Image 1 (spheres, rainbow, N blue to C red):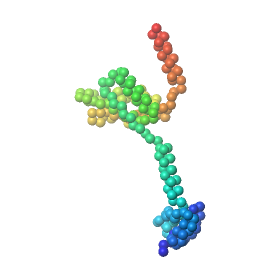
Image 2: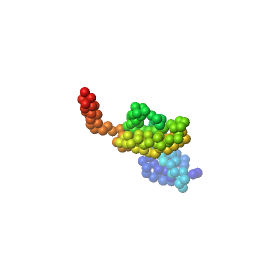
Image 3: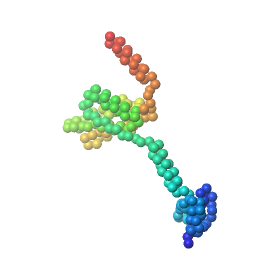
Image 4: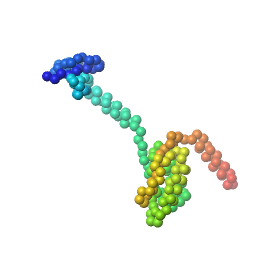
Length: 182
């Protein structure tokens, strides 16, 4: 008969017992006999409520998944000959994504003869990175990938935090512009 080293439910050592004797001991306490170290000589078995143990392990795994930080990657596509207003709109989307703590993959699509001037795309990407530098940092620089040029922006530490007084300053500037226009 194989022998096992028995550990009680409170963690105290019971001693080396025969397997059947260890099973009887566990059943007398209405608990399960669980092998915890099979490679030891003799194997180590513990007395525990296995259903409760499994449940606790599942709860720990669930909370670990809940507290895990998930990074989302959003994509914005541009063209090298983008208009001023379209650029501002796309820049607003990039800012919104970065403030939502998401990474942004900015892609410039080249068609036809535009491919002969990749520096225009690179300049546009670097200009966008410069415009959002307070909330986004370049994680991968602009790289040509066939017909596309790709750059990845990641949120900085202060992305998503509203700048105190920013809305009041913007309102005051708008009022000054209106007064100057009159």
